Amino acid sequence: MTLPFSFGIWALSEWGRSGRGAASEAAQYVSVHVWKLHIPIRLDFLLDPFPTSKVISLQNQLYQLLINSVTDLCYQNCLAYFADNASVLDVGIGNGIMTRRYHRLIKSKNLKITGIDINHNYLNHCASLIKKYNLENNIQIYEEPVEAFKPREKNFFDTIFFSMSFMLFKDQDLVLDRIKDWVKPTGDVIFFQTMFPKRFRLMEVIKPNLRYLTGIEFGNVTYASDFFELLDQKQFLTKENRLLKENWFQGEYRMIVASPK
Image 1 (tube, rainbow, N blue to C red):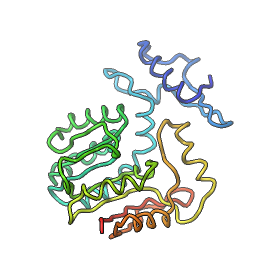
Image 2: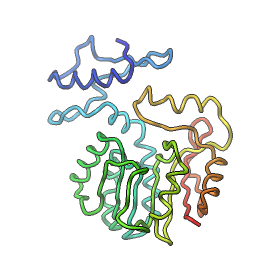
Image 3: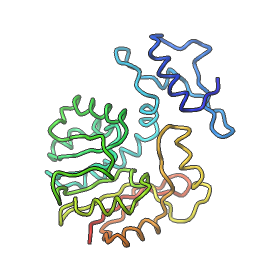
């Protein structure tokens, strides 16, 4: 059967609620229609494999399948950069999948992470992992957009951290203006994201439309020249610019460390 993706998510959740132990042969696949392509997805592959738990959302499953390796690269480098006992704002913390591998490091460095996100399902999953790994003293999460979030006090955070989230904001100028007063005078703002060194018209069409296939927002293409020009305009000093990995279609995973001038 061929379904628009949003309907496919609903159908899968309804199928899970029906209590069937496994999909029938006739319903083992959902064919997702994206543009003129029909992409088969196995229902049983996308379901939570643990028999005692409920079916978790298709979006969360795809997040893990598509984002895990990138998340690992991000937190491997960024957690190493965070100072011991640092107060960190993680803007777009997502489903907290990084805690599976890095919960011991988070505890050993005594990090105090405030995580914000606007996706309720992701935060529920994140909360379950915080509880599983006893990170209640290290990570606090809030369902709130960065455009509305207010820290406890001015200059509260040692580090403000954007993990593949900055490219999602429609008004990036506003976000940079807001966070300036949230970071301590000696603190940093870290951006981890995919960047393109030169114009790529095809990717400008593909990237924002990936949400129709995956249900996950990938944002727009970020060009290095535009990004650093924006930082300069908003009075941020670039302190480090690390190439972590070359990505497909000429993209680059980069970690940029900046601070308000």
